[in-house]
Image (cartoon, rainbow, N blue to C red; front, top):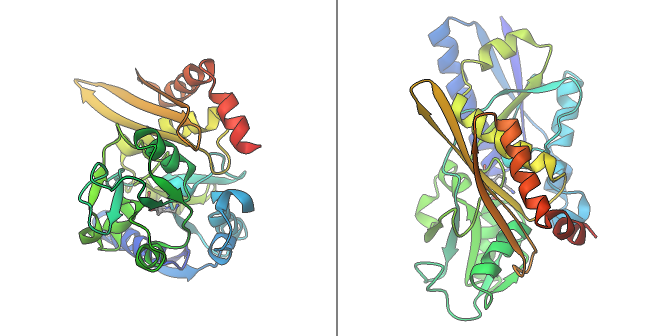
Length: 312
Ligand SMILES: NCc1[nH]cc(CCC(=O)O)c1CC(=O)O
């Protein structure tokens, strides 16, 4: 019987979502008469070890993914479960996205100490986020807010809300839902106010392109509308060369009528202080083409200059 070793980071969120994926895959194996067993392998990444520096300064989000991809290429593991939004837009040679399962809630949310919405936060409130995308959109909407950096896993950020005197912090709703902490959410930020990160709320199941057995299993786990939406968002990110942490957001939705699928996507590029904010919405049928066209539309309005300033 084939044993599939599944690599995961060791944060509460990573362990929970990998456990959930393996449960789903076991079910799919039963359903499709596929014989295999699963084993979890925890991997400590650089991103997990370096917690005291802003991510963009130490090499961006790819830090969470690189070591796990190396383990895949070395054959130490056969499958990796990542948060899609932590995935750099380019995969190393030989690795593929085997499945993109059904997306969780893509929105960002606010965890406050009292206020029931973004509008209710007091003038000058101290808000914790290290994401340039979140700070850009928050400052654009509420220039009075004081944004301060906060890092760490979801659990340590929730602790810092109290211990470091924040009035609110921003997190992805998906992560909180997966670990069962929805009751901590004070308010959801609609995409019109805060466009999510590319791939937010989705998972990425990565494997070796030559592993037909694993690919065969994973194709049953793929959710086509999510995969198309994520492909469009990642194409947008790729065209903007969004390698490391950047103030870029995008959210695509899919509608199917008769036999034709239409993708609607909004994308944003903003300066971290919210002083500049470029946003556009476009529709299309080819995800890669749409992502690239939406990026071009923002580049024509100066997106590349904003990003160049951020990258320094
Ligand atoms: N940057 C860290 C990260 N990567 C994935 C999630 C959870 C949400 C998701 O899976 O999209 C989070 C936490 C957060 O941003 O609040």
